[in-house]
Amino acid sequence: MIENGLSRKVINARINRVRRAFKWGVEHELVAPGVLQGLRSVAPLKQGRSEARETSRVTPVSQAHIEAVTARVTRPVKTMIELQLVTGMRPGEVVLMRTCDIDMSGKIWEYRPGSHKTEHHGIKRIIFLGPRAQETVRPFLKTDLTAYMFSPRDAVLDARKKLEPKRGRSKRTLRIRGYRRCPSDRYTRGSYQTAIYKACLKAEIPAWGPNRLRHNAATFLRKEFGLDAARVILGHTSAAVTEIYAEMDRKKAAEIMGVVG
Image 1 (tube, helix red, strand yellow):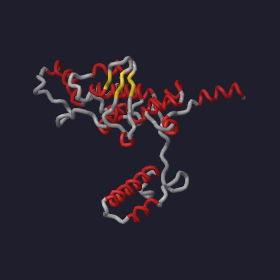
Image 2 (tube, helix red, strand yellow):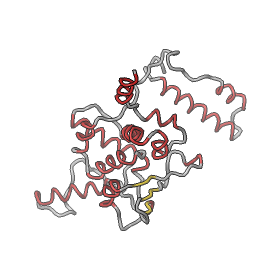
Image 3 (cartoon, one colour):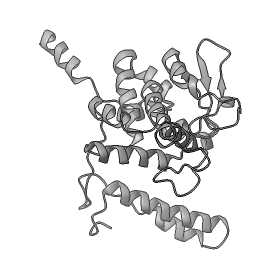
Image 4 (tube, rainbow, N blue to C red):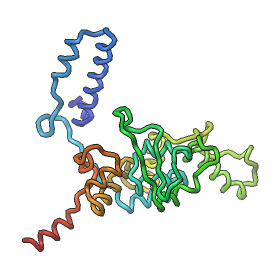
């Protein structure tokens, strides 16, 4: 894997996948427990102590690149990007939003995803939607409470409405270029990311993924409200994880040291 140019983190992730496969085998009495114990004794590759390629640190997306993408994506994708920036939610959480999952009884709405990254640890995830997030999401609330709010199907209908006056065709006969099959009723993390990648290509900017938007939110929250507040809003159980996402405000640190000495 090193010779094939894979990064250290990818290699460690693949080795862990092998361990999980053998763990399943031991659980179902298909593999001797000693084999799994031997696999667990293999240490992961450590930074600076192997020949594996190191990846660059993930950083927030620049505002210029965000604006370049939002100008070239569909209305649902643009809204999901804006929601991530405001709330710091994960891509997998924003694509699953349904009206029935949002408690709108209070001044601050509460969104409880039907599925999230840490649910298997018994951790409850609540995402608070303030006035900006509410204004962003309001046009996508649906009368069918169980329907997904952000749908490629809705994006196609929006495109049809724009083309109908120009082409003078009915909704039944009009075809949208690029859609050879019926669009899905919701975005997945993969299709959401693909939509952003395609917009990056059109804008001729470096490609970035939706998970990097959490870095933008984390950096802002940590700077304005502190590490603990950022940890709670992002749904992290450890402040150390939040530090990975949040870029330190080095400019402020430099200003303080300029005064202190």
